Image 1: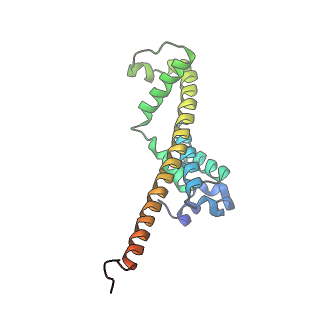
Image 2: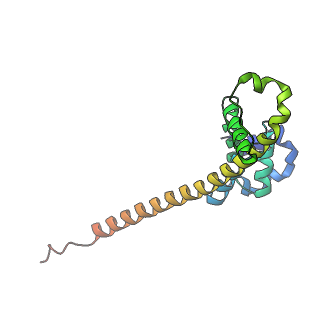
Length: 174
């Protein structure tokens, strides 16, 4: 993950100026991590132009961890974008009741078809972004709590073992 200084000096993020000095953007706790997952996974389904800037703006607006939200945007990359957007298109067609044509590369390359694709694609992207955002938020909340409970259980076990080791055993009566 980039350091605080590297992100602050990033040329693309200079638009935010002194807003990047907010310490809440750099804290790592359950609220900031969960919120960062929600923001990053939502922005991941937006069109790939300026995703990092949108993720940074969302992190600043909601005051969640900035590096996590910006890093999660990179889940959508040139390898994953085609299946993600095709799935979003299928979801959009399913919601609108439109017939999903069989997948043909020539259909997607021909720019004449793009206006017919755009409506279901944007609707599907919005739905997929919302679902991914909710799953990321609540999944991170659950994972954080599970880890906390595991640490508490281990701490109790260590404490009980230390107490048991300190108390004299009843078999050594004199």
